[in-house]
Image (cartoon, rainbow, N blue to C red; front, side, top):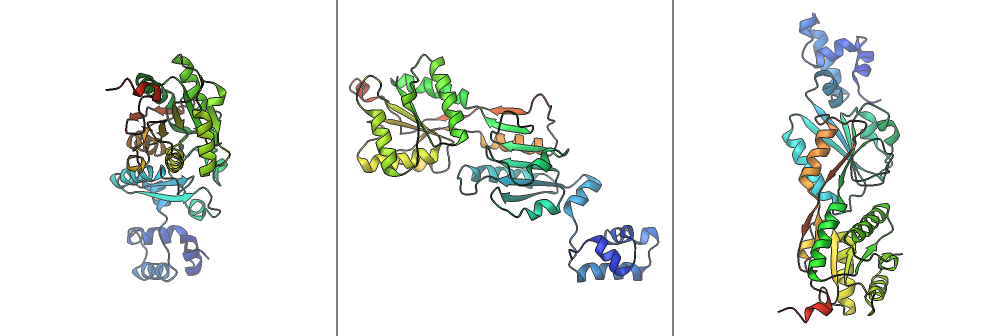
Length: 338
């Protein structure tokens, strides 16, 4: 049986209230005898009792316990976010994080404790317990995007603003035919829709055949699809935006092995600025989300420091264009460059 104050009280034949006071060092104040206090403390030690952190926080509101569910620990984008959240928790008096993955079947820590708030790290997933959390008064915050009807706070990257800045940059290099390579996820589809909209706003073509969803990320598939988009002709693509940095790095490798030179033959742009983006050859041009600002906002929302209104649950943060080596003027413009 799990060691709780109730179990200790039943074993000793005393009240739960007495056990609670004794374990908090307040037994003498309510007239409990030294012998009774000693017996309670010895029984608690014998059965391995551990104080419930969440219960303490409910009592004096000085302790904070946050549950963090990560969609995919293997995704390199989440590492810096987790680090930022851990730093914020360390700076907050008596704050602890309990982390688990979305694919973990046993969320036992999440069923044992009462949390002050939950943070879902990643877009478009609902972990076990999601319905229960969202129907309670406990704040639930998603670092990412979910369905439009989702009734929790979402701290999202404003990719439309980032794409507008990116298109100004690519257009300045001379690119007019810009394509998109997706990976079939809901996030990828949303980014494709936003990029198409921004292309039209910029007066640039957005033909459907320049927006491709990959059936897989095998080298052969990447090369075949990209070469088809680069074929000579009026509609050929000279710059390619990918759904993520991971896909962009995979593409860089595949193109290198097939003899396609980036950026001389094709400019490539990633999204997310994962830690390895700057180490690629060529270093990857990408849109960098403001990790520290996103983590700080999600943390404040999850502990109730920043209030959430029912009519304003979407919090957008603007990414930064990071220009590196993977973009250059299109081939027909390079002859004009000094």
